Amino acid sequence: MRQEPVKLLDVVALLVDKPEEGLTAGHVGTVVEVFSPDAVEVEFLDPTGHTFALTELKRSEILLLKHEPVAA
Image (tube, rainbow, N blue to C red; front, side, top):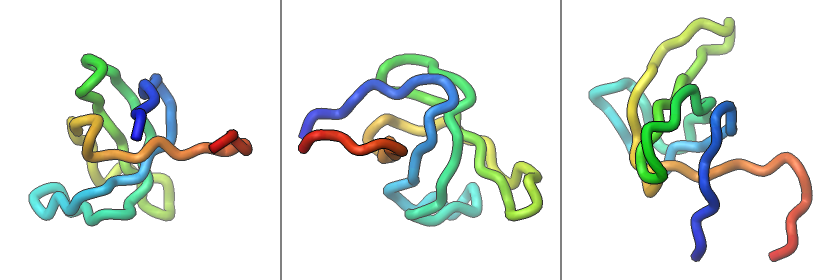
């Protein structure tokens, strides 16, 4: 499967557990920094809008979420 590049402010889902960060697979966050094609910083918010995790992740650890239909 081809991985599309991740851009600043993209919404992503975590594919792996990160217990040291208090994160589990499925958490949804926003890309706040792109370090390289394979490394990004993602911010995760609680239901009240407060940051509960800010962590660097590999591209392989996240799924880029789409808000519009795309061809398979």
